[in-house]
Structure formats: structure tokens, C-alpha cells
Image (cartoon, rainbow, N blue to C red; front, side, top):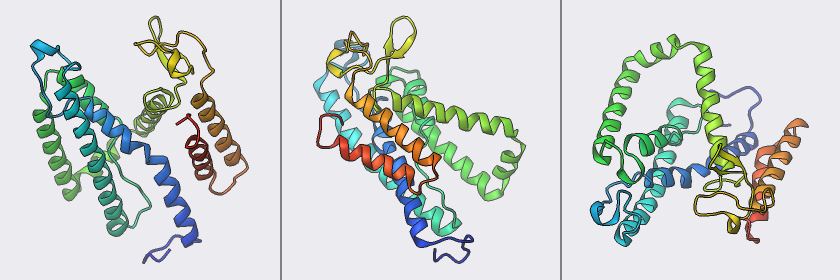
Length: 255
């Protein structure tokens, strides 16, 4: 692959295919991370006594959130690009880095709260994140972080990765940033929905036409295709499945 220390049997075509697969598999973070952080409200504010606790009826507040979302998209792309380049040049490891999809939700919905309804302000929460980054950087420089990583039980590491994977799958199955297989439910919190958007009420609950949504079945067939190709050890299975679903979605109202 051209690196000073190459893996046995590595080729440029293999590295290129792997890089493209990682990119298309992680590209959802660009929009999802921006959407989650924008839900915190960021630096935007309004007269909450007039427009309510979430300020959803304030046009100026909505405009501010739209600008913040664009800024978050740019920031997500920039920091991911810099981190991936640094990982390749400095560590020579085939690892892609991007904002974590678990911590951003904890930051937006638990710490700051939806549209700033939490107990911690957006500015104070950002300051805490900055201090946290400085501490972790210092621990890495001193080698203490590796010691902490070694004392964590293997079962806990496996459970953490599994939990994050289930959380990401849950996001992908919802309608806001996924295929819409899971929708809200007043009795069980979530349920199998899969209905077209016009058959959902204001609470995102399917009123009829369950499991008849085009995007839902397109996503399911894409997962089946990827699984089948992986079963037969087809090279570039994930890449082919993602590109095929994307191409089918663009010319039709299924995006």
C-alpha cells in the first residue's frame, strides 16, 4: 500500500476498496451528528416565557438552528477528515475516526436537553467537553490511558461495543434518520411501523398502512443483499449494497 510497514498481502486496490467502504458506512454521521447537536439548541435562544420552553414557535430561533446545523455539518466533516489523516500518517493504522454517536446524544438530550431545556447550559457543557479532551490528551501523552484500557474487563469492552452498535441500529431503523421500520407507540414506546410519512400523526405513530412504506422495504432488501453477499464472501459486499440502495433512492421519492 506504500506505507513503510505494510501488512502482508496488502494492495492499493484493497486499501482503496476498504477506504470507500468505511466512508460510505460512516457518511451518515455527517447529517446525524449535526441533527443531534442542533437539537440541543446550541447558542440559540429566545423569549421562553412567550414562545414556550422549547422555542419551537419562534421563527428567529428556527432560523438560528438551521444555521447551526450547517455549521455542525462543516465541523463534522472537517474534524473527521483531520482525525483520519492524522491516524493514517502518524499511527499508520487503517482506522477511521469521527464524532462518537453515543456521547453526542448524551450531550444533547441529557446534559443540555432538547433546545436547552436541561439543567446545564450549552456553553458550560462545551467547556466541560473541552476540559475532558485536555485530560484525555494528557493521559494519552503520559501513557496512563493505555493502563486504564488494560484494567477494563474484556466483557465490559465487548458490552460497550455491542451497546453502541444496537444504539446505531436503533437510529437507522427510525424514520428521522433511517428507513422508518420503527415508529413511536403510546403503549410500548416503539413499534414496527414502516408506513409512508403521510400515514403518521403528529407523534410519529402509524395510523394505518403498516409495513407498506417504500423506504422501509428498500432498506430491508439492501440489508438482505449485503448479508447474502457477505455470506458468499463477495468482495466489496457492503460497498455494493450501499451504492445500489443509494442509486435506487435518488430518482424515486424513496430517499
